[in-house]
Image (cartoon, rainbow, N blue to C red; front, side, top):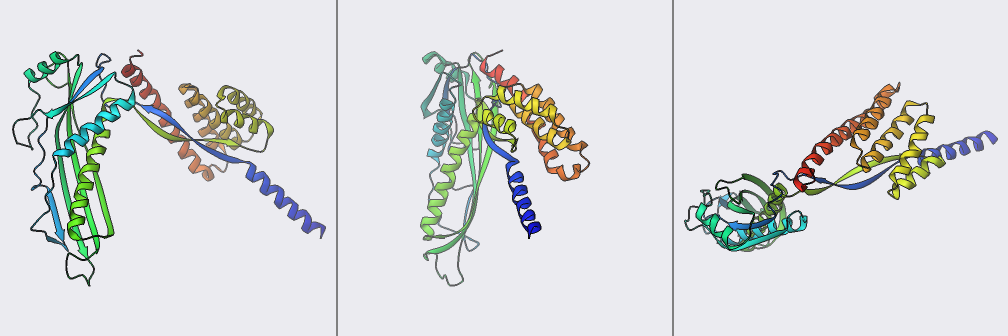
Length: 356
C-alpha cells in the first residue's frame, strides 16, 4: 500500500514539475520598410485617377451549370477606381509617415482605351504642382479584373430562379500605379500588384441576385485590398509576430519571466544570464539562451540577440538526444533569419524616416 501511495505521490510531483516548465508565447509589433524608398522631402502627396474603367463586357464570365449566361447583369466598374484611391489615401494617412495626402476628385484621362497605361503628361504635372505645394503625385494607371463565376443548381433544380444554389467563383485583379516627383517628368517608380478572391459555397439566392451581388462583392473588395497593398509600397507598415519565453518552477526563472511580462527586459536579461551560467545541461542552457536572444531583441540589440540565438541552437545540437529537438532547432534557425532581416529592415527604415 505504501509503495502505491509513494508512486501516486511521485506521479503527482512529476506532473506538477513538468507543468511548471512551460513555453509562454506572446506577440509583438515590428515595423517593416516600404517597398519603395521615397525621398524624405516628398511629404505632400496628391493622388490622381489616371485610368479608364474596364469594359464590363470583357474579362467577366458568368455561367449557369457550366453554360455561359447570355444576358449578363450590367456591372459598372467606374466606382472601383475611386474605392482603390480612397483605400490608398486612408492607409497613407494612417501611417503618419507623410504630412498631407490629397485626392483630385476627377479623372485625368480623356481617351477610352482602358487597356493602355498612359504616362502623366508634363503639362498636367506642372499644372498640379503650380496649384498647390505638392512634392509628389501618385497615379492610378490601370485596374483590371478577371471574374469566372459558375452557379449550379441541385439535380432537382429546373430553373435558375430556384433559391438553393452552389457557387464556384474566382476573381483576379491587377493594379498599376506610378509615383512622380516634383521636378522630374518621368515616373520615379511604377509598380504593379495583384490579388484574388475565391468562393466555393452553397448559397440561398436567386440567379440575378447571386450574379449581381458576387460581382459587386468581388470588384469592390479587391479594389479596397489593392489600395491597401499599394500603400505598403509607399509607407512602412506594421506586422504582428510571435515570440516565446521558456520558464519553469524555479524562483529566479519565474522572477525573470515576471520582469519580461512587465517589459523590464534589462532586469530579465540579468537574471537569465545568471541562471545560464549555473546550468550544466545543454537543453537547459539552450532554453535560457533563447530567452536571452528575445530579451536582447526587445531592447533593439539585434547583434547580441543573434549571438544568443546561435548559442541556443548550438546547445540543442550538443545534446546527445538532439534529434528530439529537431523542431526547436528549426524554429531557432528561422528566428535567426528573422533577426538578420530586422537589421536590414531597420537600416532601410532609418533612411525612409530620415533618421540617417
